[in-house]
Length: 483
Image 1: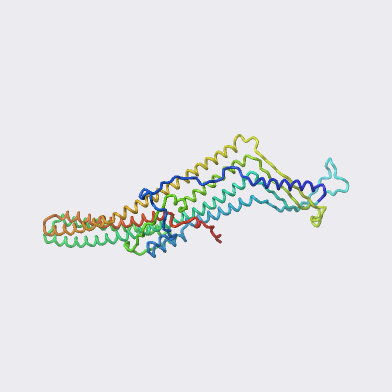
Image 2 (image 1 turned 90 degrees about the horizontal axis):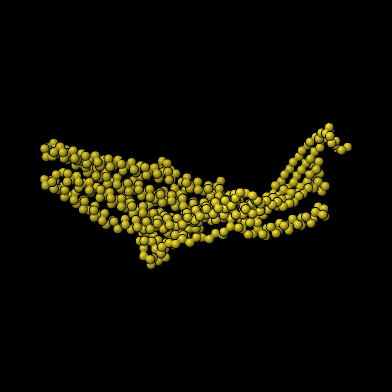
């Protein structure tokens, strides 16, 4: 390198150092978590509710002590296609972050070219004497470009990409929690249908026996055709009810097969009464929801990204500085490319700035600010929805729990009323219509008792989900790259 080029290089290096130092700043607002006012307690609690709460296990579904349920949830979390999609979205977001972060470093490229050309000897301007008409040119050079992040545009872009990565990780946890809850509730629906099918099957058997008895009584002249037709209609009602319950069970079984990724899934009938109803977990204070639910963290990351995009939009209105340089060799012969005489180099600074844009960049900034306000509203809505879901679940759990005693009384008295109506009919004190009414009432009461237990289980899952299902921010770990 010649001596007169040294001052140019020193000046360029000084410019690089200055711009790099100045590039530490970033325009636009820095993110601060917004405050959301929440009540001191849930409606079903007193304002003196303790903040203490029992840690809810991440595998909360094991509290129901059912191995079939454990296997179904495990299969769902391993095989469900919704989770596969979310995992792919995480990998995409991580790749976007890597790409965005690369913008903070110089990009170096290697270029090579080799040409052979012939110049005209008949032009108005003749070739100098001794200059051949055919010539070769070989070039090998490294070129580098580097955008100095003077206004923090690249920093804000990286901030946006990082928030999107964390958002996809929290979205994965939201999906997993939702799928686990959906699987558990579908399983409880299946077991409730098993119990209703068993009750209806017993009812159908009883009514078939009644039809047989009534047929003999009618043949002997002890019962009328009306009474026989009434018993036959009651048996048909029970048969239709049984078929409808069996149809519903098949649909729920299909749903579980789709959730678990086993489309040919078959589940043997089970006993609803064997499912434990766990004690409701302590809800704690409403303010703890901000730390317990992945959907709130997801909304926060979306807000962080929207906040950073304001800085990106504002930075676009200011000058962009880029450093350019190249170094290599050019010669007629390959063998001379690395010799000192073939050396070529260049270094420069490029700056661009919008002067007349008809308000385009200012409009983009207003768009980013409007999107930020939308994300802020979404964040607050997520917190409010979380509060409502916990409050609703607490009320539902409490109401179904206290309704058990009344439901059992209703079953007991309807069974006794059926027994008495049959005795009155046999003694000739009343018609068979009274027996039919008592049968329908008793059947409805037994099904309602089963449905209340089903509701207890379903609402308990709602509460587990509303409280975050044992989730913690540490659960949003990076995913392993899959081959």
